[in-house]
Length: 287
Length: 282
Image (cartoon, rainbow over all chains, first blue to last red; front, side, top):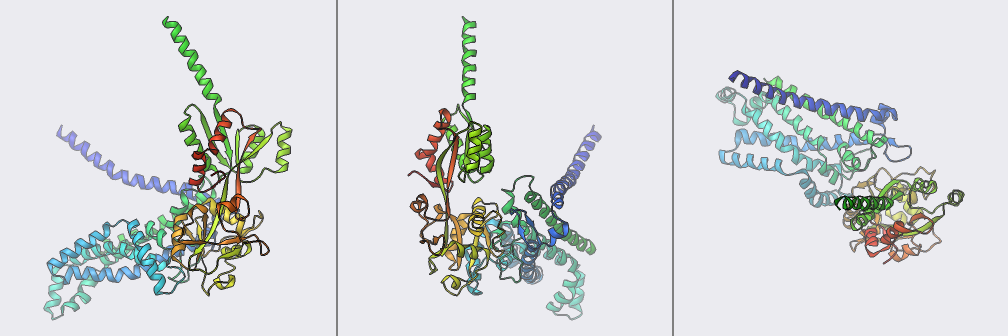
């Protein structure tokens, strides 16, 4: 009887494990089925590298190159801002800060992660956007830069907490050895701890970026959503995610536009899949 | 006794069923008006639960051809019926009867601080397609123009593109400039215009407030500049507006008449205002 119980529980756990894989596959197949239909109308090259996104014109122009660049630009900007600050913050928490400060800092970073993105977007819209507009004397503050700054706030908690874990898992003997050899505290951090934790820190960065590229609501609210080829951070951009979110609601099911939006979904899926795989590779290299 | 009662109930029920069935009407036509039609139908059915109204889109042309073929009772149309269509209908013994139920007027708005207060349709087209990029070209300050538009799926976006950018020419290929910021709601455009001295946007007249300055628009340089007011839309002098129609076969009768009367009631015209159109009756 006990064996039977054990057997049932084992199988239940197995089923739960398989379920998540099953759902991922089903979702991916659905995405493929709906998205690949767009290539009957437009060639993959024209879809990925076309410069005009006018999905409801006759005939529709379905080029997502400006959208891809928009997503990448916002993500790059967010990475430039959040990576140095995030890593420095993780080093401070793991190595420098006194216990009390450490606890307060950790708690507040977790709090930052708990702010819903729509709230961040809203705050960005009323504070950051006018600020960017007046500082850079721009015609509008709805720019890639505004999006990058706001998204940096979203990537920061992920980067800090994972990088901090990586720093903690560096064996104590490394640090003690460096100090015993006469290295200063900063030399120890810079020459011993950071290189030793590098793969974990890289994974932290990748996961932070993964969070940014999939973010929708905040970017939609503050990047202006103009589907033009971006030349600088001070221009409006339209991201892949914002395009899907803004247009899916009213796209006629089964129309070219609908298929094109699913194809954008595939592109996004591929990008975040690649980022997660890279992060995973770094994490495993560590062990 | 019981048997008699039973049969009476059956007879009564079937009568009621037949009654209900004869009271279902089909409405078809303009996609622009689908939301309006549905809002009317929902409210109407709430008040008259015995009657059923089905509303479908497909476009004004589709709606008019269903009226001609007798497959719908009321057609919604955002354009006048063509002479050709009337002739075709007469052949089939159908008498299209035109009822103007609402007006669709679009306001072009700029910031209160912007000195530009009037534009011609041609200037608007050039601004929104990106040919004019600086306010000084239309008599304003030396500032880059920030174009605000609704998202591509908005009916307002399509209407503005067809009637202002393409000047109503169906073969034209003009598009919004890629620089145009696409905002997700009329309210978002209103807010951005209120805070940005170089912005220009458009939306249904219902959204005009003290925080924005509606631009007076002229059909061409020789015409007078008109402000987007309900009065100017009603008398047809404001150029970015169009009437919205219902067409029925002959003068409305029975349930169709009841429904049309509902559309003109205070409540029906209130729904017109709620769905961002201009009522024809105060």
